[in-house]
Image 1: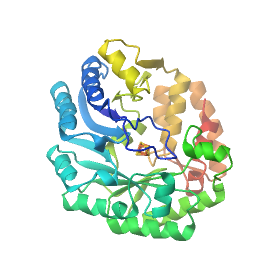
Image 2: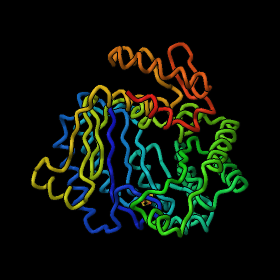
Image 3: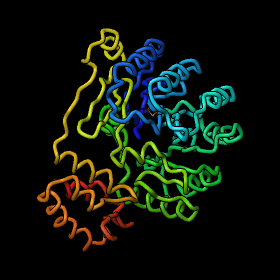
Image 4: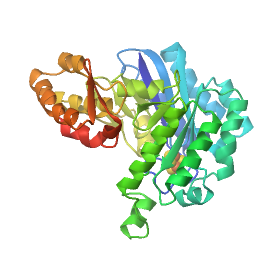
Length: 375
Ligand code: SF4
């Protein structure tokens, strides 16, 4: 089984914290969709396994596409690949786009998982983030999607801005629990250099909240969500039983995927490929049938190991010693076994049979521990 990711690089406006690839000019939308359709043809031999278990429309803002545009992409994928009967089709959308008509369209297209970029319920914070929706839309969009028959819904939340404190974070979490969505992705706000927030931070117009406060919010989220039957299955992801993201879980487990559209990444087990993060250059190269729209790197054994450690350690499935022994040389494995002892001693990592996972305390230092374990 494999997955397909489609990057839709358009947004109504630039959120001040976001460093994803997108353009706020929609004038090339039509030709970009045509280019994605052509790229589907060009990349037909990329995936060794043509059985597709997951399709993911991400961005940018896929909900800016028309029904016809979404249909054309799906139709082509269905024609060229064997799509599983149980395929998970995730569609990222913003609250302001989720009108009743849009929801009807997405139902007709058989989209079966909505990922809603809700981010916050606080009007002041949404304005500060420069989101295109307001707090009322944050609250009402989920209910409307549920009324239209969408059961598998995930919402994105951001915590750790200057507006966050323990008391309003608890209220946000309670509101989310009341919405009865089965999945939540929640990210600590990071200040990226090439964003408005990064710029203001450099000019000292904005400050970052300290790590201690962020950790407090993170631990509160784990506690509150777990008490409400969410499983913390990846550092930033919580799902109820049967509602984990199949697409992202496969990605963390090293399953192959093809990425289409500007800035999309692909992985075939041995190499990584990434498309140019520029809409015009992407369209131009695709129309000229030139391969210059992507870069490729063959992963070394150490790079494959480091990626495995970084992604696995963040999940409930953890690092599997048998997998390490089958896929990496004994020097790498022995070094790992030596290094991990320190974290077991510190009680940030726990070992059960042949699997190493983070403890509650370890979750606060996931990336640091993973990088210390790199080959
Ligand atoms: S956060 Fe989403 S909606 Fe906002 S600019 Fe980034 S991709 Fe676009």
